[in-house]
Image (cartoon, rainbow, N blue to C red):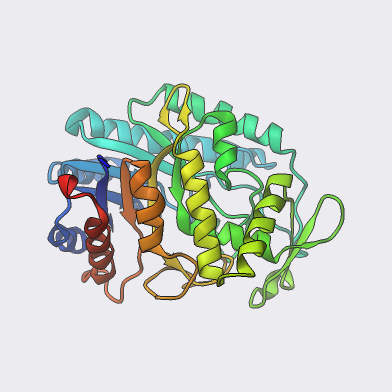
Length: 353
């Protein structure tokens, strides 16, 4: 079994963090850009060029949890739509302007975020096919003017990426089949996918179109959220429930993630290469992904068996880029990243170590 998998370190644009990542012994890095990095785009470009010249492979991730630069180009609010489209164009332009000089930007990923829940935990119902069509149209327009490969990260049904303590309802760009249906490459976040599975697992039928999820600790929405789910989502729930009868929740969700990666890693988009262009990983607390500290954890429990996921799915699939996304007690001492990288390397065939 051979693989050309590249393990990327993870960092923000910070000299201390970047210096610490050099000790991890990898050739590439994925840079999470922050809101402040877009306040002076020329200065950020210069810094990114400087960083890229120190690494063989560089990937970019657009900010999330932002307030100043929204990423909802499909919002019901025309002002949000326009500012979101302008920001994502600016982000793609930044990636291209750096790549013209350094020639080593492997990809630039971002999330699509959608309209917020109201105070009752409800949002306008979405026609999945129509919304996927809008995503396809927007992505293709963005990629057409970009020499750098763009990828869309899967989000969660109840997304906190808006910031400001608000949450948004995402009915699309959450499951790999969304991306397969429209031929858009994804940056597969297995943490988000595990949280999506858990959210569906906890959903209760409200009526023919909506499912209710109760989440304690979110008083703004009275602890209740109303979601749309597809027949495919319900089939996923049935598989997980069946497995929970014979194994714990961690093994059941990991089994579902393995199944998903095996299916979708074989798919190739018509215009943009593999459907799964990159993958971000860590463990996650059992939860919905809406409360602080639920994801990016190092634990023997949680929802993801990272060792099993790599040995049974990710490595056999030959996914090109994988990035550990762990929280650290100190971002200047990336122990969890180092442990994750060591684990992945121990599982790789000797010929590619």
